[in-house]
Image 1 (cartoon, rainbow, N blue to C red):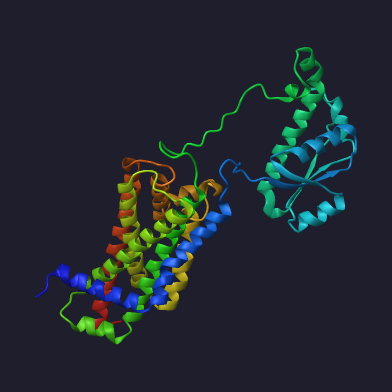
Image 2: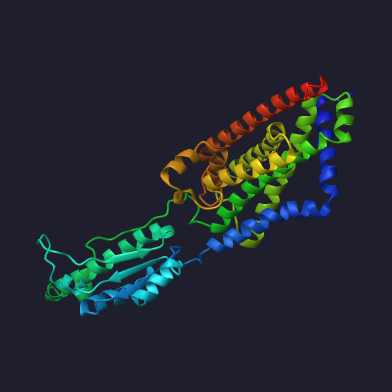
Length: 399
């Protein structure tokens, strides 16, 4: 009589043979996350030494034509923060409506009167109109900040240039802010900076592991409708051993996917483990178990295969977006970032970012490992309990 462990391993080996039987599907299983991660990394990659900050595309309309306004427009055209283009009002209306780009700034007639502005003085002030597409509200706020900076710098340069020259400086010195700004990216102790490829390989690997778990769950649903499942259930094999065998094969294939994906990232894009290797391995094991537990949960609560697939895709895409697997979570609103803390994907992504491009140590990775394993344990317990109950009902002819 084989031991329970040998029985589980034999069942897992059976699933491995079925997985490898379709070689093209097996190759795609490893190729898809690599392609996705490479594409995301390529889109967001910035060459070393160049600013990673994007520039705002901005249309500029000068309805005033005065000398001060022209200088402001020239400053906008020369700004490193925007890609400005001077157009007419009619062209700006047409292009903003089509989001080509989504924002335009209009200096109206009379804007040149700003040269006579006195701080604190009462009176009407010239206004600047910012046109934007309804979907470009953030860009409009960005444009407002850039325009305010350029106008105030131009005012300071024109007003204070005589003072600066009297003190031995230049007109540009008059517009300079009286302090220095030092921007420091806090990444960790051993890594120089953000690596978009490392972030994308972490995120896309996590997302694909969830889809791999879903496919495993859908396969189990199909097997339960076929003769293979009935032969297994007729054999002297407890149901929990069958389920653990399924979880073992799913988790081991998921772990191999992590290894292959990151090995490709290292060889082609220089993706490295800048922090704790032990932390990375623990996280890889944790997310592999989470993938297997997700698969069993899909089979346990999904009902039919079609229903399970639709709901699972919706859930996986949702938790991937909120968990920061596609883009860094700071682009999400505050309530979404708070909600994301209740998701395993958020903690898995934090952990992988920490031990890869942030260069953090094992102690920093342990909270993420613990949360991911806790989610996997809860998913597994719920799935096994529900599947055992479901099988008992089927045997009694109640389902």
